[in-house]
Image (cartoon, rainbow, N blue to C red):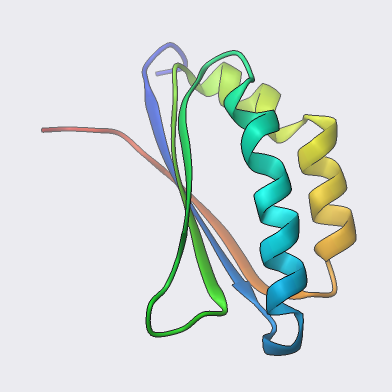
Length: 98
C-alpha cells in the first residue's frame, strides 16, 4: 500500500474565539504543501453551517510522500502554534475505490 495513491481528509475544528487565527494559519500551509513532492492536490474547505470547521481534501502519490509531508517543518510549526486554538483535529487516510 505504501506506493498506492492516498486520499486524506483532515478535519480541523477551531475554537470559536480562534477561528480567524486557525484559518490564517491553515492558509499559510497551502502553497508550501502544494509544492511538495508527491502532492497531487491540497484543497482547504470551510463548512457553510459551522464556520469553525475546516477540511483539507488531499491526494498524495504515496503514503511515504504523505509521511514526509507530515514531518515537514511548516506542518510541525502549524501544529505547535495552533495547539491551544484547535478543539479537534482528525486525519482519515482513504483509498479511492471507484
